[in-house]
Image (cartoon, rainbow, N blue to C red):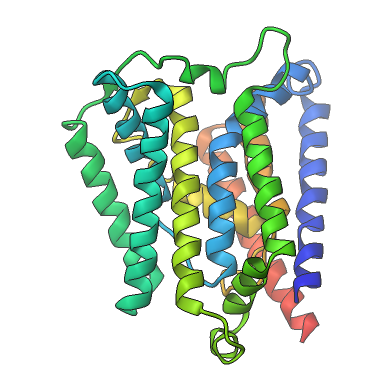
Length: 313
């Protein structure tokens, strides 16, 4: 099964290359520029980092609908602490810690109360959004970013922003965790067949809590990157981000039924969506057309996943 999973992201990679080539041919004067590549990389960072956590969640057989609200809450926490005189590192770590704690709580509720992850995270989506609005007094928090804006600012020499390299490092690290560690094997085992995993001695509840905790931490890191872009704490930000994150993971070859998925595939999925959005903008396509194309790609990815599974049986 894991070998099949590793091959699943090759198709999305081919699609990414083809879609990029089409836009580059249609708009060679703007789309194919190196500066546009840097821009697309910057625009992918938040979704990519959150998608790493979502990959773990989906591979282990769960779902998380609270990512967008969590990212918004992180920006609010960071902005609030900066405004109260805390340093950028302390504020960022606090934002990450808050989301990590909410992730652990989500995992605990799913395991202890035996409530479906869809329901738990649907409730969390509303709760976290409400908390963000309460902390921010239902308005944006304008504050000096104290250098955090440099994370996704393009360096003068035109290299990739620091945030892009952070996203790459996170992706590489968790790809190695999934593929080479005992924890990674347990994540796949739980997603493939929870009952069998229990019989084999896997601590399913611990794995589930750890997965949601890690996903929460990574949502917090994504929140830091979002704040770097916005430079304000916005409780209404990132509405619908969870759908983009889940779409990136599914497009990258993960199965919503669990047991399959790769970090590499999720990164390809995130890049593919950014390329479509950016290319559509360069072509002057309305936003609704871009949304239709993205939706069609998601449906195609799921259909291909089903067909692949049928052939594997």
